[in-house]
Length: 615
Image (cartoon, rainbow, N blue to C red):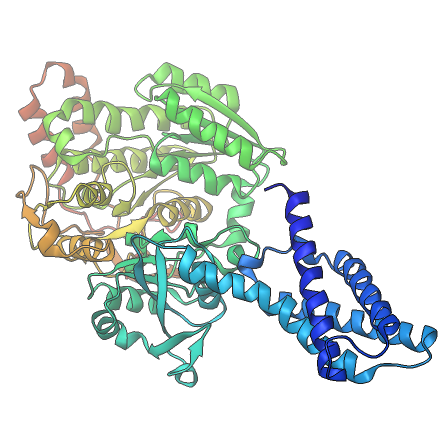
């Protein structure tokens, strides 16, 4: 139906209803269907019909979407009906020398009922009988505040949504047992599990976007006790501005289960390091490297060099950044290069003269590196050495290397290569004007090789979820957290440090898998969990720091001065020189032997110390 036909039909219907209201109003006022003065009645009919047409046009009555009618639309109808009646009364006074008060009052009331009632009656019929949802999911909304009411209203008004709100949960005791939009508030967050069971809830929507992370974590854990699928909202302002709707609910992510507030940054120190500077990121197309690029761009560098080996991933992050920062003066430059090519690394550094380098390029997959130790050495040790030497030769101010908690007492090839890479930059720091530091953190949620994407895929296809060992625990952090730590470390660097983030309590992988299954709307029994066994090179638990690396002196919130480890540079150089002739098993044994030497306790100058962050 075109707009003109729709408008014409609505106007004709309303004028017909108004005509009937006038006749009925005249009957109530005079006691007969046709009053004593037919000329007066005819005048009133013409005045009301013409007035309705003009006033309705002014207030755009026929451009309203009545399937979403609310108090606001009712207010407009009352205003139109009242103004039209008052204009007719004025016309009667001026032209007929008298106002038919009883007639106008009766007509006003019937007029209002007919026009307003027709709109809301259509909505009731439409919602109750015409729209039939084949697979309705009974939905519990956690939070009866502004966001919760918005969610409920959108779900009630959206015929395409399969979610049917049946109850609210809210900790405000004043709201308990009240109805909001016809939906009862049945209890607090401690009642979530019981409510899901008693009301046969299929779906939970957490609608408290402004709640503190720890409180959200408690709600997620309560939802995890049920079989209902759990989703949550983006920010409240996105709902209010219309950027998101009921179709924008997101699944609960693993980072929601960590229960830890996000990492705070020292904006001033970071700005001094990055703003209007030339910044280079290796591995810029990877999950960590690309997020570092996003975080760096927020501080308006003069130039950001995106260096990586994979052209597709580099192209992707380049296009994203150029679109996001198209209104800034940041210059984004791509360099397709292999960090194993020492000549190319030096050429890139000489060409762009970066102020700070974030070295994120590395092989990180533990089992794959166990089977290919020579490639781990080439990329993680030789590659780091190439980039670090190029930074040294070209007077880079700060070099930040991405390390891993697996570098502590390593049992894997990957962890051992990271520890040797730390040794290389610590040794180079002693000889160079460039500040060389490393940043050590645990598992990164959502990164390539992380267990979380695998769990999600397994749940999506119906399971089972594979866990290596029931007792395996890991530290977890989000990609933005890891990237912020890297940037913060660069701003605090004095040279020779290793930074470690306080990652909170370690998480049991089995518990993580169970929570993901439950919050995806399944039961552990339905999906199933299988144990695949500890893979080569893996440990049941990881450590963020060697017990001998920590001192108690705090130099920055959650950052401590540690002790410098002994560096075996001659042995490392010998291993690199004989790499081509060595067999895989010999390479693996040499790596683990060098990486697991004991820490030498010796005092170092304040300017050249190793810093550590601990809980």
